[in-house]
Image (cartoon, rainbow, N blue to C red):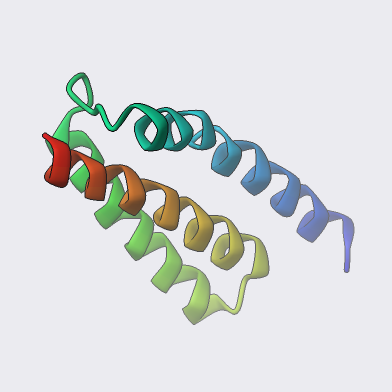
Length: 84
């Protein structure tokens, strides 16, 4: 693994982990009232496109970070759609 890949993995971890507090809050409170459905829907779509791009390039940092971030965003969307 080269230094560029490591840099990408660290960057992906930082941006992915930024979603974790929101996921935890939505999970605990079951409240997503202040979360924009449009923003998270568009973000989830973009994450899926980045994931596809990473898969086509066989780029581990893109694949790993966008897969996990999409899972976090999808969890928030689930609570948004379920709880309003």
